[in-house]
Image (cartoon, rainbow, N blue to C red; front, side, top):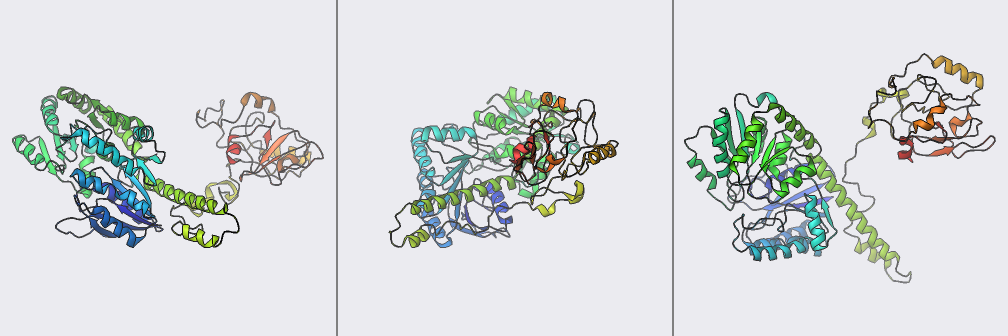
Length: 586
């Protein structure tokens, strides 16, 4: 699969350049993907990062950026064009930004599959707080630009509330919700030995100057430092593109305070040390423009978070189960109280840190990119099937029907093409850990690790009662009643390692198989010997039962002399009951 990723890209410091880098790193690792990055031009020119194919073909505030991108796409002919966008990606000038946002629609009209990852919506941005002089005009232009972006093949947003807005207000159903991701492959467990030792560091990180301002944080820190003398405020990051010189001006005002440190721009390699040494991260924002990348970075290193109580952040915390302590926006005293309470409560810090780390494990970048690739492949193959279906409806006398079909589907992935989605191999499984070397997959039976004889009688248990998971995967059943009794006696002393005593106390409520009716199962304390033929799904005289193999095929035993549907050795199920595993297999 050939993918063109349209994004700002390092060494450029444009918005979303770091996010574009992490997407590109995951795509580059996939051997079935050919990736080309269509990035913004930088001046002066700098060396590109090793291992990436980068074409810098468009510029910030260039009205011809869309045409330059279309020319590059015409030359490369990718299968997927993936746009990583903010509304300000193509320019700070509103006209240039609007023209750049036409690119996804024009790329689709040129025959390319286009996908847009949209990080915020104009409908939710506080334009007055962002310093916009004509908010009504911006809002109207933003609504038109949003409709143009929704004409792409598919759009991804990062919060469920954004999807509801796009569906309810704009009436589009090609919108999907994706997690932001934690911008790392392997989240790091919090290193508590470095936190509060020798000082308690408060980290404020971001691009400052618009809705992210430091005055409130510095005012609150004066109250914090009087209550917590060893507290230290670390301000990381540089100026927002629309607020040049802001951080330097704040640094001059704090020149006499040794407890406040300014790091400036932080390189990717320095992020682990910066976050791991911080007791908590603070987000002193006056408004929000979508899902916070700083919050997800804090999760990647297990750092507790304190931030303004804004609707987007509330939704993010609830939807992704991020541990955040909220304060009233614009209230320095309330912010100081939240920081003091959290800095002096070590147990709460650790609980929030572990929760954020566990959240990060569910949102690693390999998982995020894998979901995108699955969506791209499914969408393209579905569209190819739609085209084939249309041609099949044409009358047989239509000339050149096959030639027309090939022309219409020339850009669609063929069914013989290798999928870009990497799947785990069954060969990596360890056969030694399972009974008799049984494995899952390849239509082989899954061993339970419970001693049993060849007739499917399980060892252990009080009075022969069936237990959760006590399922025999083998047994041909062609044995006499005497042989059956002898086998049962031989196994009576063999322990079943995983069977819990005392009323199954070893199983938690979530682990216990839900498909077993213990009230109905209680009378089945004795397994009647019969002739044993119910085990393989053929005729038997021991009553009704169901047989199923690990591949999902079932057989039901009949009355004496009748042949059942199953032909393979299966799991014996008493009184017509089926275990949960058999339901899922069928």
